[in-house]
Length: 158
Image 1 (spheres, rainbow, N blue to C red):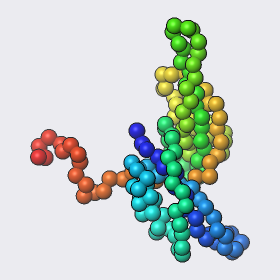
Image 2 (image 1 turned 90 degrees about the vertical axis):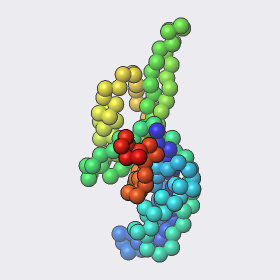
Image 3 (image 1 turned 180 degrees about the vertical axis):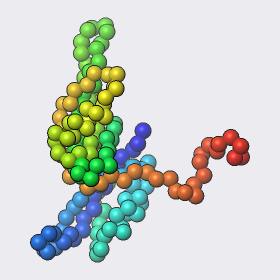
Image 4 (image 1 turned 120 degrees about the vertical axis):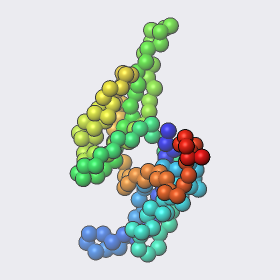
């Protein structure tokens, strides 16, 4: 399971009208610690920053699942609260357990459609309790360094 961290960067951005404005933008980073999240985040954004910038916040973000797409029009991220419905066999009472998921889509309707498609084949009953657009700019996944050796070498590579 991935460990996600929401990292925020503050910098001066040139707006479409030519004005320069200080903005704070959030990004999602896959890492195992706060230190690694900051290091990886800086590696990812530094090439795109001109001038001074500052990482202003890093916090854990709990997402059970991410539904991404290569579709260029899907340029927004939506947070979906999904309630899984189980039945307590002893009491016969329905129980709901919530999980947050992140969906990349072009708009709200597209997000619901992509979430349902991603959940297709799920054995558990579920319902979408809430879905809303997030301010996330991008998601940075973990990439193993090419010179890293696997923890468990393949048979015959010893």
